[in-house]
Image 1 (cartoon, rainbow, N blue to C red):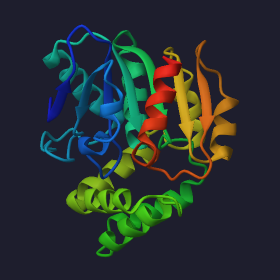
Image 2: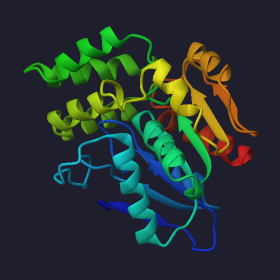
Image 3: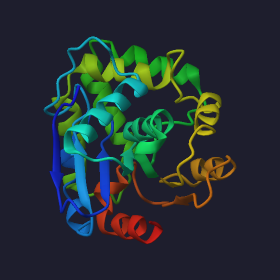
Length: 251
């Protein structure tokens, strides 16, 4: 499944693949892309989100979606990318790096949706996602991901993305992230899965405690973990210029 994607920049430039998070779409990268002029930039709408369908029956397993990403790269005629993912997208680009290491020159994960410590809390959330109260629950989730400094425009875009995505898609994708035998969102499974990543990785967390955990994990040479305290979960939308500079300097 190829789905919807955009492709901008010269064919002779290094390629960035930008993968959005849960309940979002490729439009959330709009403020970052202008700062990445030296690159060719491909953004995708992940299956079930934005302008991409979700009707092929294969669900939302990260490794299934990694195959979607490969299909996009093949369609665009791109062999290798710097794969950048936010939140759920951090899981998806990590799955791409594990299953197709030859396609990923380097990996950037932004507040990735892995390393969760409480399965019980995740199951409570899952039940709310499938309940008649799901829309209110998604609004509460968004509020919990903001900080006082999160700009109103970012808050509005996040809420709109969640409301525009089918609630069943959101619930099923959440389960695929954390609560199946193949999921790697819980901390022990995350640590096992990340041990398979061979690409150098830049990880940026809003929470210093999450960053401290990530720094203890083995990583490929050249990898780095940063933390941005005071920034909300949607750091690529809150501080796009800072992020562009950080990624460019690291690369």
